[in-house]
Image (cartoon, rainbow, N blue to C red; front, side, top):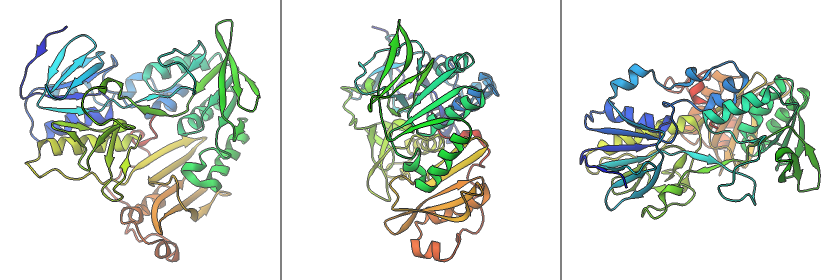
Length: 431
């Protein structure tokens, strides 16, 4: 068992990606000058994940361009970096985090920002490694391995039609790979963007040669002589493949919290201020907090949410007693497919209606509003970034639906200067 690092004023951040780094920067910006430890499971300095499935996979960017901060900027934060040392256990009573190396870190406050891990197909043995030729996409190492493989792949099958699966399909098709995309839904991405926009994106895939297998799930990855050779679908169809990507979603990385005393239920359960228990906070993909508007437990797996939650946690850790603020964002995500910029503000899944209010799918440029309980719950844009951003205010104030669509446009008063520009890679869909 490793030694205990006993620094009573220490703040420990577990997770060295966007949420964890944002929390560390926020703590320093708000005046915390005590010992600050940043723990990371990977050897790399904090890097940006959204480009993994786009610019890096395509070969336009190299890994050094993904670094979230320069080495000089990290040095200025005076962090105690513990990289390549995943956390393995937490004892909230002793306020102690244990690392895989045996080290034990005591803390004054703890930020859990361990993100998420890719899901495998149902029936896969826990901890089982995929056969050679089968990939998931979450880390820089995953993306580099897939990039190398795609250069010698003739046939790729992607299981899962979320943003990551769609983005990889577009990249691979552009590289000349024969791509098949398997979607459990009848129209890929329709749960996020509605059937009309989803059908438009599906047509775009087909125009670029991607074969869509919709309304069916994958049963298993086929292996021959120890290597991936295809995917069997639940309807009995077999799809041959040199390479398979499993893009069936991700789950919060919480296994190390078993027995910690925290409530773990599809993430680390937090109150509306992101507090999970005495001295413990959570941010990013792993945080499931009580949303102040709906009162419902909410977990968001997007890059901007991770950074915003990190900053909110930093403020609340340092707030005076009773001064912690609730976290009440307008979620934002974007994706790139074949030169189409898809932007989403707010919550669009489960919308009662998705209505195009500007442009059209035929033109390939549009803005659509999403109705939820008689109000505007979200806005979706395709290749109209300014107009889409102008509708954000309707989402922020949950404008009545009849008022919003009856007016024929937003009552927004111009773009929100505080929102990331659509061209910023940091705002993209997160692998």
